[in-house]
Amino acid sequence: MDLSKLSKEELFIKCDELGIKKYRSKNKATLITLIEQKLTKEENIVVKSIITPEQTQPINNNIVFTDKTDKTDKTKIKLVDLFAGTGAFSYAFHYTNKVETIFANDMLDSSEKIFNLNNTLHLTNKNLIDIPNNEIPSHNILTGGFPCQPFSIAGTQKGFDDERSNVFWKILSILEAHTPEIVILENVKNLQSHDNGNTFKIIIENLEKLGYNIKYAILNTSKITSVPQNRERIYIVCFKNIELYNKFDFNFDEVENEPITNFLEENVPEKYYYKTDSFIYETLKKAVTNHISTNTIYQYRRYYVRENKNSVCPTLTANMGTGGHNVPIILDDKGIRKLTPRECFNLQGFTSHYKLPIMTDGKNYSLAGNAVSVPVVKLLASKIMSLFE
Image 1 (cartoon, rainbow, N blue to C red):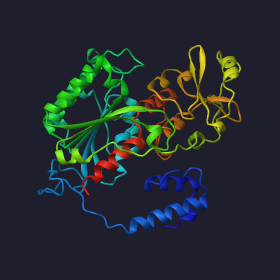
Image 2: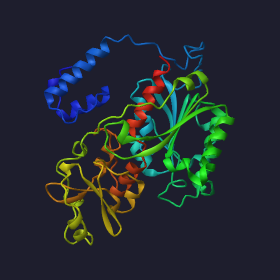
Image 3: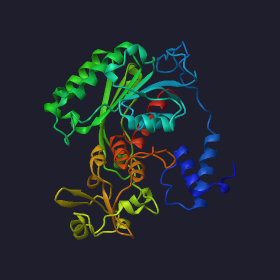
Image 4: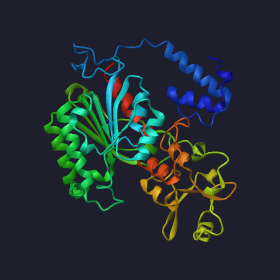
């Protein structure tokens, strides 16, 4: 491949595919050098064999991935992506080139649109509770960012009293029916403290009853990846195999963040800028005074403006889809504006070639705010796959 013929945007995509970090501020020549060095390094690596669903004898760690499905690529581990949303879990695991998603589910039309736009597999748009377990194909890995609103500090914190939390019991029934070797669940960090810890205790105890060995941690996107978003989420990783459980950990190095400007679009449409006729314009004008080049980003909080002083984007939430003022705000050369939907996806770690469906900004904002953090899941996926080497 002649890298010199690629555009800078195409080189960005290539860097992302190869796992090259901190590339957005580089010029084209440097990007080409980074890519060539990475490709040369990979060519010199002897690729170790990985466990495939067809194997009938354990490799390393005494784990056997039985042939649970007759779907497509027999060399890849099979993943089921529940509450798929944007498809972030699938997107991150596919980067390992060792995993294939064979079933994805969500009950939102917007999720169906974005998932199908970016995957050959079609998402099943239906309430998970209404799907019989035998209609879900057998699989090796189950992932799910199950509904966080029942446990979120931004909501009413009803927990198991909220009908949306009933899906946890459905997850348990799927695990009992299919016994996947690995389970990864994601939720808001408040899940651990909800109801004085009783909710989390119930979740862990029920997973353990099904024979899972469990590790969990609260991970912050802005601490362990280069993406500058303050996003703290709890990740629960479950293993059937005790040796894999013993080898796995959440030890990730802290990483320097890229500047927020690296995640912004050029030539942003006028509709994202606040005009003098906006009822909050005067409030914004007085408070939003630092240019985005200083890595400063703001939030409008009903009657006041809050400046984020830690040089990262505040947590993106689904509430961004309910009203424009929930979207983070910046001051650029043209004026005061809110982030665009694409910029919100960028700050969730999606690459620019991840397609956004043509629908209202509100729905795309909501999808972005609900997504799991792609770079964090990439780290988890890479570490989990490395256990089999």
